[in-house]
Length: 111
Image (cartoon, rainbow, N blue to C red; front, side):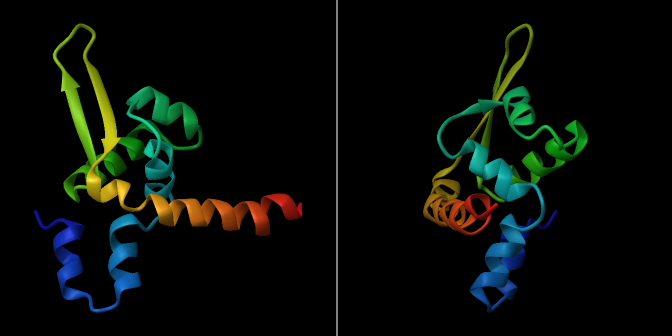
């Protein structure tokens, strides 16, 4: 399978290459949710109540394949799985902080 990260090698526009990895409705929100700490699947779902479990699972798999998040499985009963940002994912933190700042200044606080 060709990951989106590998597809970015064929794109010369840096914005398009970045959006190929993190674009869409859910990936930026998932990454924003993981910016400060490791979270379990249920915690992520609770912070994003409008995402279905199926879509959350798919998006987490894609983010993991593109090396933006890491999935750690604990062989316990019941099984526990935790997600966190990789170093590559953490490098997006300043971008998300600027998006957060812009959203507060230009949308949330303008209501």
